Image 1: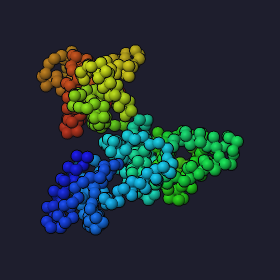
Image 2: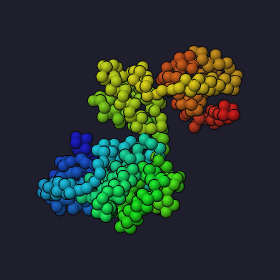
Image 3: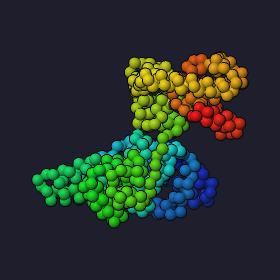
Image 4: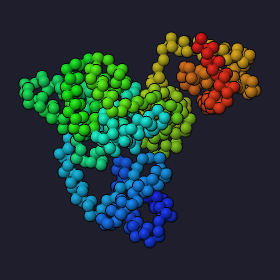
Amino acid sequence: MDTSLNLWKKTLEVLKKEMDEQDFAALFSEVSEIYKVEGNYIYLLVPNALTKFRIEKFYNNRLNEILSTLTDSLVKFKFVLKDDILEREESSQAKKKSLYKRPLKAEYTFSNFVTGGSNRFAFISAMKVAESPESLYNPLYIFGDVGLGKTHLMMAIGHYILDNKIDANVVYTSAQEFTEDYFLAISTKKGKENIEEFYRKYREADILLVDDIQFLEGKQSTQEEFFKVFEYLHGLNKQIVITSDRSANDLKNMMARLKSRFNWGLAVDIKLPDKELRVKILERKLSFLIKNPKEVPLEVLDLIADIFTKNVRDLEGGLRRYVTYCVSLNLPFTIENVYTALDCLIPQKEEEKHLNVKNFESVKKEVASYFKISVADLESPSRKQQIAYPRQMAMYLIKELYGPSLKAIGELFGNRDHATVSHSCDKISNLINSNPLVKGDYDLLMKKINS
């Protein structure tokens, strides 16, 4: 609440410079109390209807423009009358009692979704749908690998809509639950009564959220029923949001007309998170796990981000296990304890270890040959440029090609520490993007290794 109040004060400081002093005082002198912070809005109390009308009519857009320059989050200001609060809360409680919706995970909101290059377009698209359901993209089809945040975005849409329209009938289901509901509706003795209840449940949705649509593959009769529900809701301009582990065109044993419907609106994918985003996710998650996140060194987060590269759930689970392990045993948050705490989460078969060792040694030999030095030089403590640069290139190539932990890479080059390897890989990555000669070395070595 204090943070939100500070944002409001800073916003007013900027706006005050743009307005007549008397007009500013007349409008904003009594607007200094926050009613609540909910969803993506900061609600401010205004003393009367005229003030509320003038602020919303003439200054609301500018206030939110200024706010967007002061914070990375997508929060906005909204204004409420003091006299309306009690009536509104009573009305909301009554509506909540009659509201039917499947549970949405409380933490799956837009404000808790960490964005990066791999998911920003999907996030922005979901926000647009949440702000203007039934008008922009219908359906919104979100696809990507397991554990990358598809369900989070879908539920965030539901939360956002309910935050701003409490009587909306948001129905969340998974394709598996939809299948089970249909099976129960047609297999019990009530017959017609049950199927009517099934249709009523889904056809009365204002917003239908359907998770893991790929589960309908091969289920012809269930696909037929889903098609009917889809057609009915779409015909009424009701918003539909669907997630899948692949694009609609890549779904197998799915009705062509259903796949066609999935492509009617907007399809957005979520890709694997890059290193920067994985660290940001860990930093955000850490703030919920311990009181002082700064107790955990950045190199620890870097290491966990290097271990879990393909699944956000695994990434967060790894951090949770590490923190719990250290706190429970009263151990310091060190890199060494990462390996101890997460040992059972990163198993590796002996034959895989053997293959990796062969691959790593092969890269070292190719790099040494290319730069006309020996493998022993790469592993030596020498810091001469003619040795250090090839060593850094070899480290980067091994990391890019095979993705071992930074500790494992360090062991290949004279037991160098995690920080040294991280610095070396970052340096080569930057040089590839800025120095054509380094890019040339990298491309030639990649070609030699891959051949």
